[in-house]
Image (cartoon, rainbow over all chains, first blue to last red):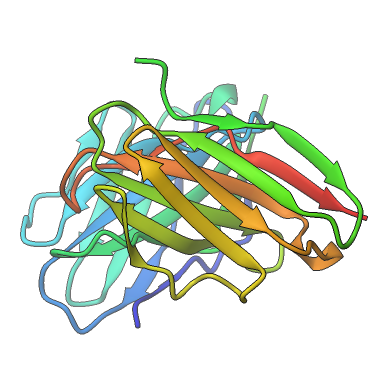
Length: 114
Length: 114
């Protein structure tokens, strides 16, 4: 079974600074997909960024980027120039190739302070 | 695109009562997922469908839980009889086609069983 571990239950960062959220996963698969989702207080789950395991280049989406270390099975999320609206729960998720059951980590609660 | 629509947004019921949660996926999405979110266990995949057919229901906690998808535009998750430990937020999500497609989540139903 695949597991996703987020070891930081809570984090905080000052507005405009950079923060990195960690995620590790356990799998015997070679091909898979990784995602970061954001859940603000509104409860809506929003896709932040995704990465294909067979791509070595780290994905980026504006202020959001990942550090994907396949050998270490690590998939961290970096948020640059943090904004108050980034305050939310962040979930790391994993999906196997040719399989659609997405598995989530326990989440990291991020607070951006003014 | 109206997004994934779930109803009701909140449900409060007494132990022993039947509860039915409803979901309308995004039109054209082949996959539909039901997740449960609690503080203790995070986001758990309960069941998912492909083209209205249940593919994996191994996450359904027990026989009190059942899910149906009678057509491409509607799914239900039923709990009968409900128990206080079923209190959680239940999310429905849909996705277009492949495992790399992100999940599109509804706003969730917060269920409270007293």
